[in-house]
Length: 129
Image (cartoon, rainbow, N blue to C red; front, side):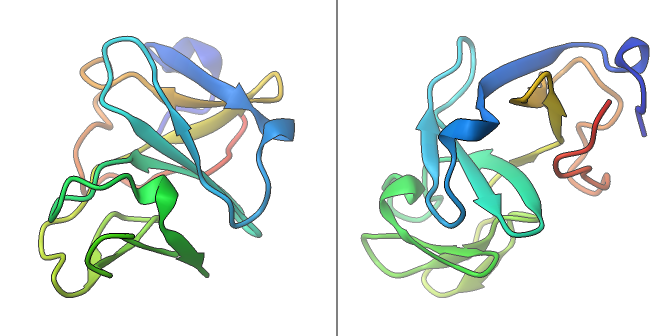
């Protein structure tokens, strides 16, 4: 698990911490990435793909309840911590990204540049590198 900037291969800043409200996701478009959803919860920051795996809707248009986001189209739900579906018709998980706070910016490790890209790897939500 990386703990210093030298151990993080490539970080990708997404948005300022101050721009996020608890429980209100923000859609972010970053070069070379699918649309992303940035979540600020009481216990930290979480980043997932923004597109529902069931119906192609933007999860940022959905409802956040605790650590779950509900798709606005068909009411499927996902846990934003690990991406697992928590309510039908969602059955395929959404991708989650290792998340850091660097210089008051929410950042992720750019996929393909880290040994931590595997879905089973733990995620440091809002950790300082």
